[in-house]
Length: 248
View 1 (cartoon, rainbow, N blue to C red):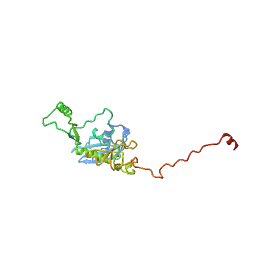
View 2 (view 1 turned 120 degrees about the horizontal axis):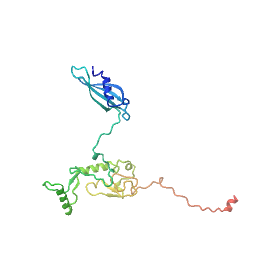
View 3 (view 1 turned 30 degrees about the vertical axis):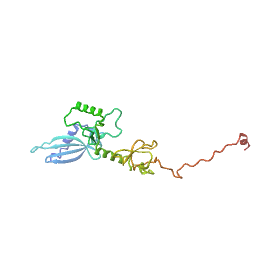
């Protein structure tokens, strides 16, 4: 088969794009179809461990010569490759925003629902801004509020996070937050599950915690007798004088 023996032609095609020190041994070939075949070569380029060159060659019907279709550098098993690309919005993590950064929320964000309507007439940006200003003047409150989906997503995120019952801090706690005097309860639909820690000595001070969360700074936690500090003995006055020391 002419395509299978065209190893040197495939090697020359790689050398036309890469240096001699970037091309390794021939690793075999893969039949792609009728008179269509791909030769594989090891890649010795620095920083490309596990990659290999692939050269696809073909032979037209009733032709003796082989034509090079393409030369590509592809990752193999164990190759170091870039992580799967994610949109910028999905790459953001809590704490990434710096002072002055803006993170716009789309109008169709499922986490939010409108508190009031703009009406049925189509409005441009200036008209919508004017409606928002009038609504603000009338005291109608926020333009949007949490939807059921947004509320449930927040509750799940909080409950599964460090302020939930599965954290290492909560598992080692002597009691749960629902019996702690430092817990400030929330109002609204999440009141039965979450509160805010108000203990300045606790790790979660000022953070939302689940009622079944807990930590060692619980208001009713006490040290056992073995863990309590041992009382110090009474002070002993040193009555020895210089003359007493010399007498010894």
